[in-house]
Image 1 (cartoon, rainbow, N blue to C red):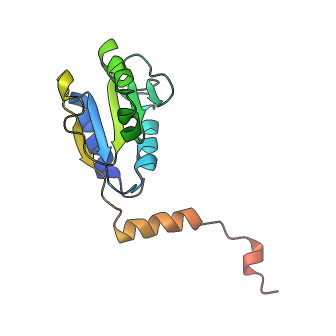
Image 2 (image 1 turned 135 degrees about the vertical axis):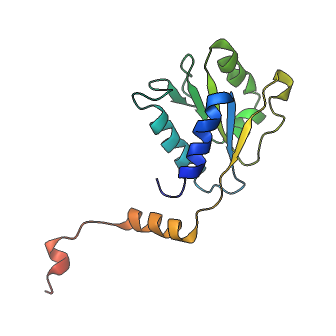
Length: 147
């Protein structure tokens, strides 16, 4: 996964000891793509959340990782209670949220301090590599034929 390995590692380390982890950046910077990659990796056999990783709005699995993209809207709409029910109902349950801003006091009244992971823009080299990978196609005989 191009350019996001440090942030992904930080998220996984934080999920070991924090109930809520927030991946944040004011600009999109690939928040959704990064969350999808984290979810796929976390759901693999042999991983801590294997078979227990779900994305909002699907109902979270018991004791699993519940991933909420664009959580700003979910938190503002009053659905915070759904997230808290998931955390309190199951031992080992975790939340991974993506937001525009860091969340410092969103869950403070419940005694939960989120761990915030900033998602910076890709470096020029990483953005170029990602662009080239997305536009690459295999050569065909027609590409080599001068006629």
